[in-house]
Image (tube, rainbow, N blue to C red; front, side):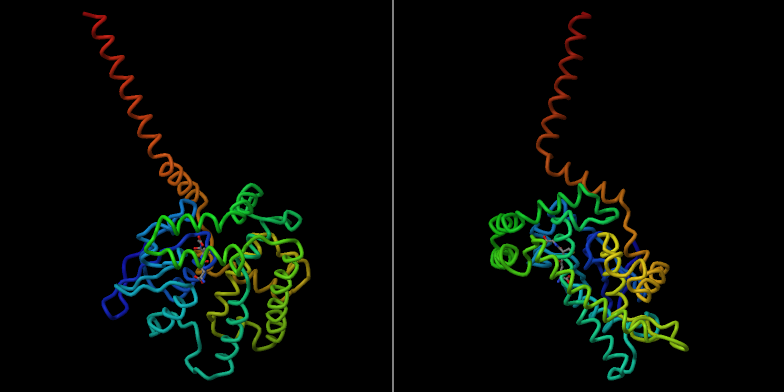
Length: 326
Ligand SMILES: N[C@@H](CCC(=O)N[C@@H](CS)C(=O)NCC(=O)O)C(=O)O
């Protein structure tokens, strides 16, 4: 955890996130890329901490990431990234958009961002989990048992969100709206094989555009990133997306084994970048600790009774020995 930094207004940044969350990773990479220091706090999605009232007060939708800057609260990764670019842009911080606003490069960054931000990442993640015929070399943390768990979770997610709405009357409307979207709308993550074909096609089209663009970077432009010399916000979004697809085991479908050679080279290059490593190489031990924390929290009552019972048994035994001795 880094020391607090202020942005010139005397405010300090704090990120509420989860290390496995795609949207959190985008923000983490932006913060590292810009060399902004910040405090961070894991919100355990396994323990449903995102639906505790203290967090719902920050984001009534119950989603990470959320950034706070002093008293300002900024939810949603896209808004956070833009906030960081607007407020941390002087020489001390990394620049993720060209200084010249109307330039061709700027327009290209914007176009690629819109294309990448529109992709259904949760659907590809949970849809892959629910369609074992798509499991082709998934990597940690997406073990087959975790994928099965995720698929089960997706089936009953709307019910769980409705329960959370009942528990949190103050945020009931926002949560009921989310539950409805999880049951019938854009947050429904149960995908049939046919629906998955459509989801995967969307990624194919977007990555096809990326490959076309990368293929134009020849000669003097050989060292360019996606939209030019500047490592931009579009690169952050692309890197975190490639990472998710790789962990799900979709690299052969989208770029490896000669499918999209320029994208393959980009993927190899991005894995060397410090900000990418720092935002994506989460510690599995940390996740195990989070699961343990969740189990302890869930069974707090049982554990307290067990400890009391053991204490009582020890006391009775000590008394018995004492009485027998005398
Ligand atoms: N549009 C939001 C999406 C955030 C989001 O869906 N976060 C997921 C984790 S990747 C989450 O917190 N899910 C918990 C839940 O919905 O219960 C963003 O860009 O930040």
